[in-house]
Image 1 (cartoon, rainbow, N blue to C red):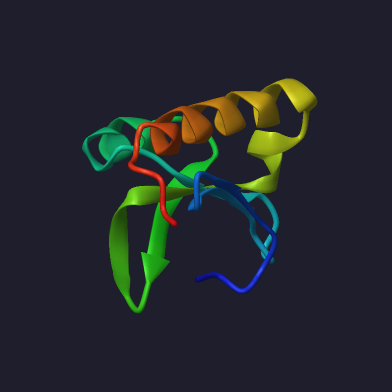
Image 2 (tube, one colour):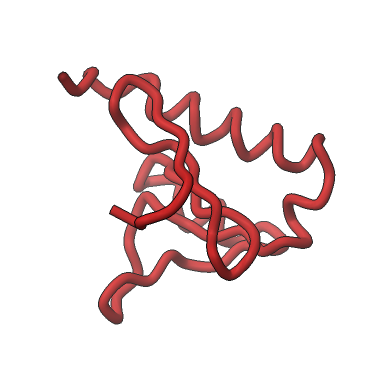
Length: 86
């Protein structure tokens, strides 16, 4: 989908490295707005529109192992609930 390095859980992309620095993350679409209220986050925009259930975190928001781990856990926890892709 993004043409870069991504990490999958049960066939679903959970998190990916952004070529612009930082990461792209996946979340419950209902949680998108609250995640976007956090520091260093922005909407994931594709073809001119915001994608619910996806967000960006800039490089300053993943500068430490602790920061990155938090985003990885959030994204992995959500996609682990989705039915596996075969």
